[in-house]
Image: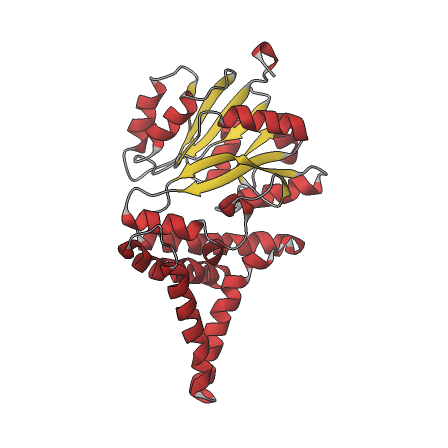
Length: 319
């Protein structure tokens, strides 16, 4: 694939409350080595920071950058609106909190042409600028934190259930109706189910590694994972056969802790051993991370249960 043979792509990006990362995300797109990026479409939602002003400044960097309004601020509606005005043969989804390596688009297009997949994506490599973010990044790239999903941990190239971000043929994306706008989160997983039901595969390429900055506070992390659990339940209720074991482990853990607490009060205090096992597992998982500072390992002891329990409570109680 070279020269004029390269298909034109449109970058689509939902943007909201991204003042700290948007300019770096845009710069990573502008420095791609793929020569046929025809549009960079930013779907701008209402923000509580100066994201709008930064987006306007970014538009002056390159005439291919287009701003459109996304009044709801929802990811699915923003991506669909961007896809609606796109002209490229392929859509490349990018997040405003991530930085693409220079060969990302080139590798992604080569992979989707080679595999004829319905969606191609890779690894979300969480990184951090602070002690807290570095600890969260470690949790997001560990089996104890997030299970065995390839897009967090990596693995061999091939078909999978879901990937980070995504690259789609525009006509096929539109044929499926795009993302489900009734979903605040997990809309990518739901779309991947429909892609597989349509007879296409979801292709994981470990060469597609994208840096991602995680949430910067305990409150924001808890809210994020509560939402993950809430919207995962909706997707799984709609598509129960798509359920993976990793997606129910937090709920089983929560039920086990509640059950053991009640049993320790009503039956025998030895049932509280379940709590001891969970706490010891958290401590062991946290302090085996030799590449982190002592402070970051201590932070992990509250980050792990925050992720687990927020997800589980969102799945059980979220609306």
